[in-house]
Length: 279
Length: 83
Image 1 (tube, rainbow over the protein chains, first blue to last red):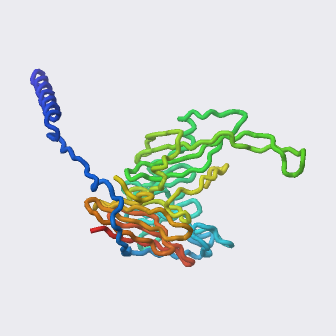
Image 2 (image 1 turned 135 degrees about the vertical axis):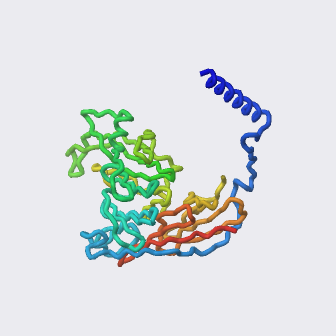
Image 3 (image 1 turned 90 degrees about the vertical axis):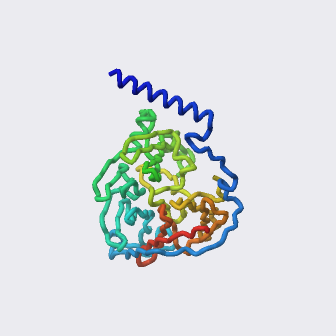
């Protein structure tokens, strides 16, 4: 017992000495680096144009019934736009470790290997890849799948945000879920932004004629909640603010970034709300 | 760090940072500029027409997709790095 006490005292003395010395002699424990302007600013540098070098290509032919069967893709007029007489091309393609190519197919995710072979179907549209090749999908619950397809965890951001933020149900109004989006940060955290709207029935003038009124659900309150989970599915944060603008570039995880074709990678998809919470 | 770009698209393990420049009007191709710690030069590149970026990795690759009438093409590219 006495020996242990002396050991603790000795450790404290050594620690106090080190901290004191570090204050007197800056840089004793950590090198103090003064940033130079040329190290932190890249403004005004000469830019030379260079070609991109292709490494490999994956070609995945549409199957007879379309990418996943059912609806045929008839080609496209513009990336991301619906095609007359057919369906829209896939909205989302995410490349993960392996590499694995995850393609959205009518709200679900189809996975392909680099040879273009179909390797699996997951529920929900692809959000991004987390550590160890785990795939995050959204559509219904937010899910994380292991590389072998096992559901590691699933959460319900809308329901959790309502509870945590204390959004009260009222008899005179209806709470609905609006647009929902998510991305996986490079550290593996999963950010989910969900629109919460309160609708109230209001009497409005009908366009059918003067003096004719009707009832309509009108949004009286709406906000974006940001719910963040760590890679293990544990709730890390829940705010009344949506995903900050600084993080608005959708990210698909350490190995990929999401984009919505048609709007390139400069913005998330439209935030148009839908009563059913789908996209 | 001060980067003259619209958004940081990717960061490589070699210290390179891929910035997305402000998109041009309409269908103008996306232009990226690569900066690297310790280098006082930058390298720019554009994606070929019809290619849309879908991802990047820390090994210096970006991924693009192109939707064709007969199928989907995903391409892995190595981004150029300033000397």
